[in-house]
Length: 452
Image (cartoon, rainbow, N blue to C red; front, side):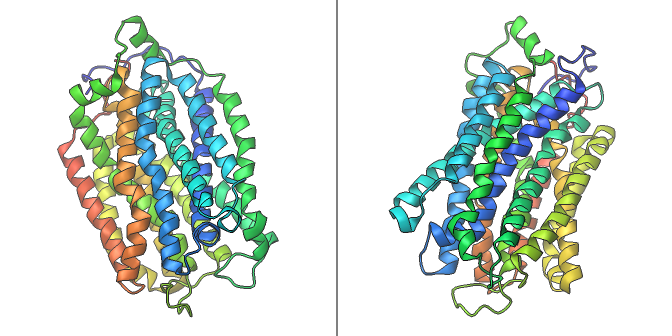
């Protein structure tokens, strides 16, 4: 970890407005692309790419492909981290954004299982792996742009801007799906309409190309941060950043991975699993389906969007708190809240519409409070010469342990418990305990000199 000293007073290389916009718009686009797939994994892909005849098996297959992207993310973190630590943040972020944009656009053009058989899910897996590979290099680069250009004492505040891409991307992606579903309504609230399945689902994927063009225009105007330029001038650029991280910063790598664990599990339970559970019929006629809350897709997505607004608000709230009280202390209290929240799923979800809405608001509030400080905390764990690689690996290895398996495990636990969400909530609480232990073993980072 960097030595604790007085933060550098060197002027940032980029204007504050450019830093905020570049870090925010890129992650918004990346998370938009990711959420478009997550929504389609529930609504579309089980019907068009995995027609097994068993609804639960088809959903599990769709979520398995969803998780495949998480496996690719650490590979992306290594590849883009190597480029980012050796060649600079700017060119790396442009490459990550282009990779994600092309993969998402191509998903919108894929043939279905009925058209080409097994080749359809194979191509879907390939595009999903490309999405994960790109996101593996996106987040850490955006976080570094924000934190390495942040004013003195405001790193956690600036670190929340790339984190805001998650709720904003969610709202845009699901809002677009909601509009399309309203234009192409279905007679069965538990199923998309025939027109939606035929062509409507492709629109959000194809629309991503517009957002990518805007994102590239913003990012190409960036200049390198002072921290990276100082590393180049002093000859401290590592030949193999990955080897240096494992040799000199392995403890920070392990702690950073565990710091993100509860965040990832909470995030994908509240977004991906909740959509399956919320829109499943209370008493399904099909024996292969599990009972859920019985909301129509449109109704539950609107409820999700309300919850995600709290996600965005409390992501911003977490920044000043983490700058004032420290990242570690803030996250310890939030993680305790996550543990309690996981144990409260059954009483909340059994309390009618108000209980479900309270569950969504509480879950997304905790999500904002735990996700926000990570934009500063993970980069602060590593010196500048390996910061892109180290923070990216921590963030993305945790995606395998948390996000890759969370929707899959949640559906399985939902099935084992005969439709009860109790075991899913308990799973969240156990992951929270693991993160809490890591936070108790770690050290505060808010006063480290990020220019080293």
